[in-house]
Every structure is written in structure tokens, then in C-alpha cells.
Amino acid sequence: MIMDYFSIEGYKKKFSGTEVLKGIDLGLNKGEVVSVIGSSGSGKTTLLRCINFLETPDEGVMFLDGEKIFDASDKKRKKESELRKIRLNFGLVFQSFNLFPQYTAAENIVLAPKLLLKERCRKDKTLRFGDRYGEILRKAQDLLERIGLEDKANAYPCELSGGQQQRVAIARALALEPKILCFDEPTSALDPELTGEVLKVIRSLKDEKMTMMIVTHEMEFAKNVSDKVVFMSGGVIAEVGTPCEIFEDPKRECTKTFLKNYRVDHK
Image 1 (cartoon, rainbow, N blue to C red):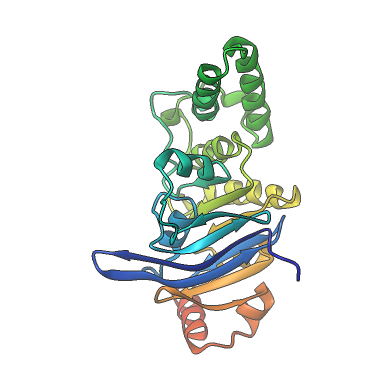
Image 2 (image 1 turned 135 degrees about the vertical axis):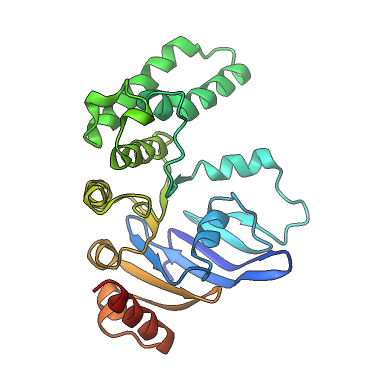
């Protein structure tokens, strides 16, 4: 049996007694793009936050590259420092960019790698911060070129358009070389004319075989870029399939209703 590169099993999460995730099983192959769609309140963002450990699942296990990296039933629950290490496997791009306004585009990108380097240097006295920091700066410039913003390294977020800010947020997530890149509605805060430039970057990452999970309301984008589409409803995965299967021949009535309502609303 070939195991998924990444998988979660039995993921559950409650908030104030309300079960938001009711037992999620999901797997991704390496280099695969999975889009998660569904109505507001279906659990999509909570799922993404639990995968990134911005929230800790109440139940469930997580596997990555053949190794169990999290088990909610483990009586020796992982400390925050251990969860931080697990988080390094995942990059997360928020819908509202979340750039630090006091830092330039380049400074936003290098911030997390810089902090990690300082921590490594404290633990290993043979490492010299100055030698390694130059590598981080060069990588930041490479990432800016990769997203088409090499001339904006010294620009502050307030000097960038929404689309440019989101592209910097993608570069910031890539700076830590995550194994899986997650997006939470990456275009929802953008005007329609700015959406295309962000989707273009995501398409380029797909061409580079980046493993990605994308929570999105952009149905056409999900249809065109995804290898697999997950439809969530009421805290469960109601249906999973290829874009063709989900958008052209859905099996569940809840999926059909959602897509029908979406088409009516976006005529």
C-alpha cells in the first residue's frame, strides 16, 4: 500500500462545546494541489488552522513523509516548542496578508529565518550569524524575483497594492522552505483585477511541484489548478474527487446544492 505523503486521520475540534471538525480524514501526495471548498462555517479554515497548529486538534493523528508527527491521544502532549518545530513543515498564507507594516517587503520575508538563525547560533557557538545571514538576504531577493517584485524589496506594505502584499506574504511563507504550503482564501481580500496576479504565482508554484492545500471560494481557479477537490459541509468532508468529478458530476446532494447556489450568485 502506497501511503500519502501527508495525511490526517480522525481530526476533531470543538470550540465552546460546539464540534466544528467532526472527524476529518485527508491525504495529499507529494507535489499535489488540493483545493478545499464549501460554505462559510463548514470548517475549512479551522481545518487549515489545525493542520498548521494555530489551533490544536482535540482528536486525530498527523503523518508526514512516512512519520507520525502528531497524535492528540498522546498523554505526553507536545510542548509549544515542539509544535513550533512541526509548524516549520507548513507555510501558511492568510487572506488578510498579515505583513508587519513597520518592515519592508524584504524585511518581512527574512524575519522568521533571521529569528531561527539567531536561535541556532545561540545553541551552536560554532555558527556565525553574519556569515549565514547573507544567505538569508540573498534568498529573500531570489524570492522577490520569483514573485515578480524584485524592485519592491525596500517598499513598505502601505506602498504596495493588495496583490503585491499577498505575493510578499507568499514569499514570506516560502522563505522557510515548507514541505506543504497552505492558503486560506488567498484572494478574498483583493479586488477582482488584483486576483489574477496572485493566482498566477500559485499556478507557477504548481508547475514547480509544490505540495499545496488551498481553501478558496474561486471555483474556476480550483477547477483549473487542483489535482483534487475537497468539498466540506457541516464539519465533515462530504465529497472528494478530481475537479471534473466534483464540478461536472458531483454525487452528493449537498455538493450539487452548493455549486448550484454558487453559480446563481456569481452570474
